[in-house]
Length: 116
Image (cartoon, rainbow, N blue to C red; front, side, top):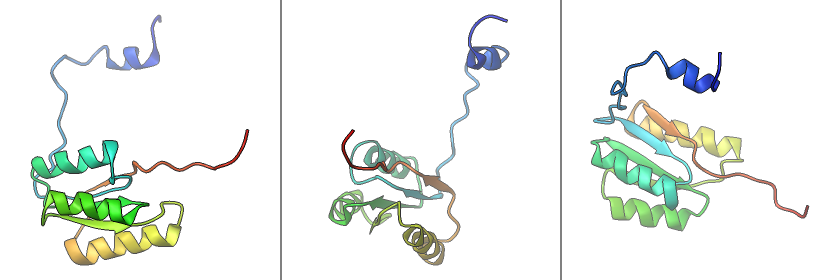
């Protein structure tokens, strides 16, 4: 069997059968959404009809700026994804305020700082 594992797994699938995720009326949490890919995802989710998107970022001001620009169907939370209790609080708060969470995008970067 030549080729990559992924190519082998996809070989039997017909072209054009890619299924899109239905976002209409969904509640989403996106970490790392204060800029870049996370911000673009938040915009797109709302454009696709998401009921609410929680914009999360380590920089709470940045998250608020994005959420304010996106409108009333977005809210902002400043949090550090390395803080487990902050994630638990985020999920519980979102459940109370917006109901079940349909999509959770773990987009935030995390790394150790220091020399090589």
